[in-house]
Length: 191
Image 1 (cartoon, rainbow, N blue to C red):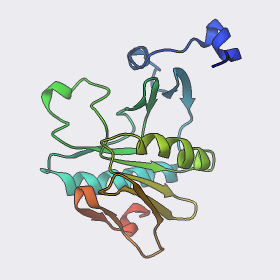
Image 2 (image 1 turned 120 degrees about the vertical axis):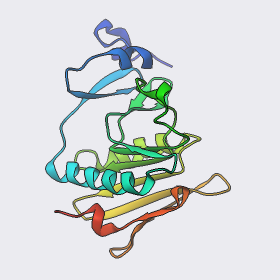
Image 3 (image 1 turned 45 degrees about the vertical axis):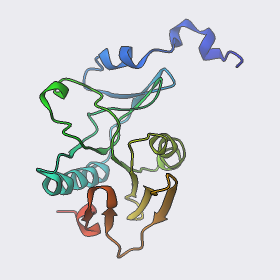
Image 4 (image 1 turned 90 degrees about the vertical axis):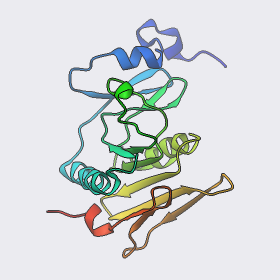
């Protein structure tokens, strides 16, 4: 592979996942992509509300199940040198065990939710969706479009392939791997 200008500039040295996870961004949010740090802008009220609604629905529904939802503070490693911060992710097999308390990575999420924005709409549907689908432990990736109040559900099939469907305006989100359904009205609720 030919060297890029970033590869030749020491100011843009690619770093490891371990180095990235040890960095303190002083409250700012960042993702690591192929060893390069990308700072993330804050989200809108709409984005935060929808992510919060999803988290709240999952938290109550999953209590006592061995699965737990997390917000965007918990990272997911999607490649050797790539770390993402999904808006909401669900981990199973007792993720809140004491040995995981200080970890910033606890394996692969079973379910990932990304709330789309104008600036991330295409990128999340192409790049991040492919990364999440490549994780062996991920069963569903759900993309939520606040502008159009649409939901795109991508689910792993028993044969290992994937199905992808935009839900209709009256359809709730069924998450087969968790055996639960989230009412659409609760995802987009404004109260």
